[in-house]
Image (cartoon, rainbow, N blue to C red; front, side, top):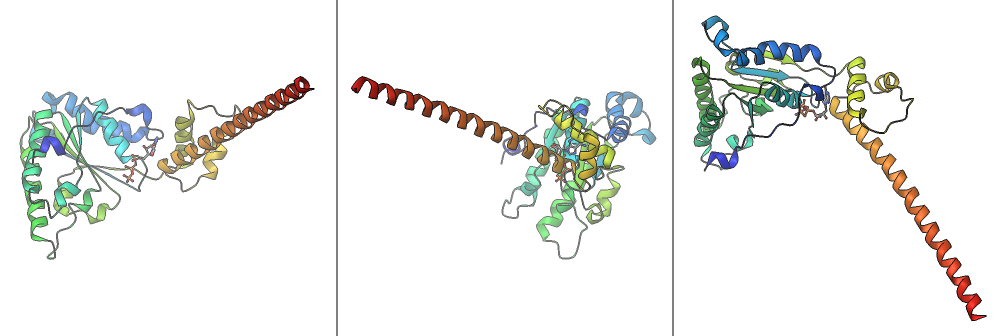
Length: 268
Ligand code: ATP
């Protein structure tokens, strides 16, 4: 298996401007994760100020964890590897150990680099006696590769995990992720900001009341708000398309009626 065929760095096209309502979190990420990458020589000087090699984003689904991970990579000018854990947990694969080693060596080659692992708990959950032998070996190997990054002060590879079940994560993994951020369900004010961002370049009614929309969407995640706006936009275009089609058909009918009466006139 050639890792470069299965694991490829992703081109990122989002940045902080694509995230609404999470200014405080962005500030924290800037100081905890990005600054140590940008000023590595200052932070790497002492064991006490080593930059984090593990970052955990936790919170409910659809609230921007993936978006934040990608924007962090973009803003820090880091490569981004989105690691599909099913590649590492597929028991029939047989080559997963080589693959894990290849992922880490690719990340080191591309550093500074973020290796993003969505639903990290599905792969690095609390170890039990019932673990499949291959799974247990995989976890141990993954952790020892990770430790290799942690102990190398010159290395700028960060494992960034996302989960909505942080309690299921192995304690040993939690220790390797000293920078932990909660990405919550958006509040009313945050929903208002997210809606404004999603609709900022859309043709909306001039009197749109974002505050009222935010109030009416209690319990919606950022992803739900995006879907709501998408549906509204599609309905609007469908209405336009239907009207335009009806107009065209009417013009067609008028034309053919006129030409029928012309023929009648010629016949006569
Ligand atoms: P999951 O746990 O399901 O993987 P997630 O927390 O990683 O979800 P994202 O995939 O980052 O969520 O977000 C999904 C989509 O929701 C984004 O692509 C974006 O359109 C929208 N979104 C979520 N949160 C925000 C936000 N704070 N600002 C702007 N858009 C947002």
